[in-house]
Length: 200
Image (cartoon, rainbow, N blue to C red; front, side, top):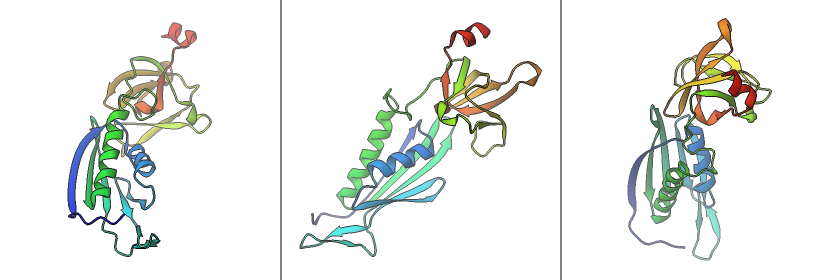
């Protein structure tokens, strides 16, 4: 559809629980649909750009200089991920940007999504099964740029000690061999098995 309205530029900021990789995955699924495409710029920035346009006779053609674009910037903070979304161009870019923010905000309260807010209570816990066989090196600090230490697996004994936003401090191992570290809450599930409850 040919849009003759004014060009616009809008900017929003929000703090969400989803880590940057989940923000980008959701953006690709909900905003990167044709005639838009999704592009990752770096670990913290991505763009959704309209690179196809509908001509006067209904044909689709490549856009040499896209005017409609959405820029998504993520910054990890203790409360979660600070997401800055900037939409410029026509109404279609604004609509896709606001839809992305709406889905991210509602997702925190949706029990059926993996990017919801997850509270991990103190006590026995385990790594999600997707890490089975490959292992997950725990972080020395609640920061993706910190050093990584011991590798844990779903069978590894883990105890959650405290939670800070989307990070959980855990104790891996037992006795003198135990080591404290940090794991993202979306990588953990409370362990309710009777053997672990008795051991704790």
